Image 1: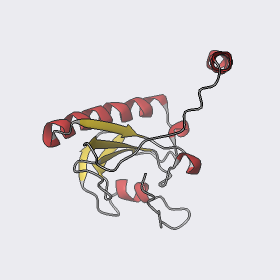
Image 2: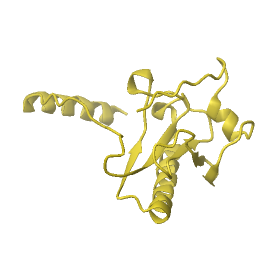
Image 3: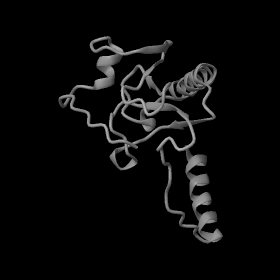
Length: 148
């Protein structure tokens, strides 16, 4: 992912300012909980960001209602991107935390039209742990979900 450097002063949020209309944006869609707007770093024509209106730094700070609203808006935008730009593929991307490659610390999801050889790479090393390790991970997560 290209590394955008957010130069917004500490204590201010770039996307909160954008949502409030303090800085310009090319708005695509808006509802009570979300705003969709064109990414200024268009990797392909039709690259849209879907953000929650309330400041939440990442996925873990969203309410269930906001999480659902983001996915509904992302789907709606993806359908419009398909109908408008006719890409042969589409990637939804959402990053959390600096180590997760998040660069603007206000929850948002990328809706990216994809084309062959467009220069976008989503790769990682496969580690393929033994099945018993996967079973252990699953049991631990199952326990955490049951306790939630």
